[in-house]
Image (cartoon, rainbow, N blue to C red; front, top):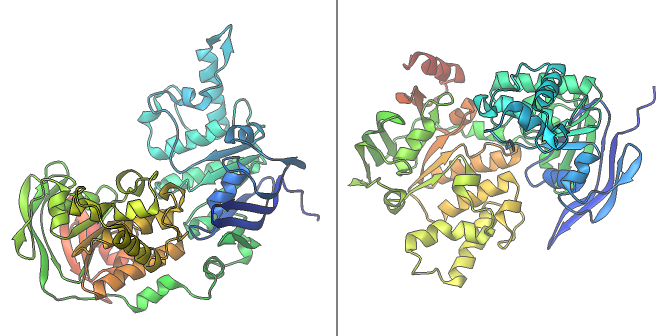
Length: 508
């Protein structure tokens, strides 16, 4: 049986930025009624290819064909009008409006210049019902969790009426902030749209999800096409090898270097430290060169503990000493002055300044520590920045590139470089590998091991228990915003034992 004609075909795609060729002769095709994964490391060109397709970036070379017609879009609006809709990781809707208003915002049904509210709600209800969703379209969007808001964003992207105008739906990291049940709800909607003939381009760094829901995948590496494969024909090991360009699984290598018990001189001691409504008073000791991982369910208090320890949230009880000296935590300056650094889980809003350059972002903390009246000499600044760009393999290796244009993994490396340049005694990492690909994840985890071996202490927070076990000498378990156990890592400690501790509130 002959293969159907692609609904979308991109051939020989080229995209260049000053000094960088982001895409080089990339081919991509998408068929009706399939879920197609676009795979590659951060910086491989996935986002650039999507932005070229949807008119965010201009095309420097190649052709785009949609339903047999040659197209080239000057804006995302033009792409949407032609039947290509994109839903990004960050939900871009109005939480103060109703679900129905969000679905039809900007294209409400009107009569004689007035919005027909009854018709708007009826058509919105018909649309969500057709897609098998149990959503009250009259309710405020803010009354629903993020997962449902994401489904509403997809419904909105499909257009009005029967949604027949949508040929291609692009979902860019839609599952990053969802739990397992919410992911299943999203997958059910994706399969329903697939059955209706919609072509779905799916971007995710969760490999298990790719193999659960996708039919075909295209793999990019360093802006070039590595290959197109049916998902059933390429296992996860083979996929990782294609993405990294080498026959290895870097994360598995870390298992051979798994850290166990650690005894050393105490660096930091928290005594009865807590914050009402944030984290119950806790005791914590961190040795020099020790990696302490924090494990717990969402909302268990991991981030709250880290923020109080850094002074980002001011504690209302307890004390902290570093190298035997008490630290003022009325503001982060006290912690920074004592040699404590903190990489927030939300690098976009609490970490990086997207409109500043890589150089400006990296140097920010060091300059703040020195004081703004004592600027770092240009030669010293440029030498330091170049050193950390090279050490962390930040790509592109251009200190004048705007951070907002970098991939998620490279943005995370810039944030790490900012704090490493201050040479901290304790580095707090809150979800440093969230939303980045397996290659960048491996690099960051190997960096943690290296920093520990060099004597730096690390407080490491990750949602994935395997990640915490892989890296930590000691595991602190949180439940209901309390630190309930401190477990020395070793061969007998498994994810099941950690889960039992989370469930019971006691180490068995």
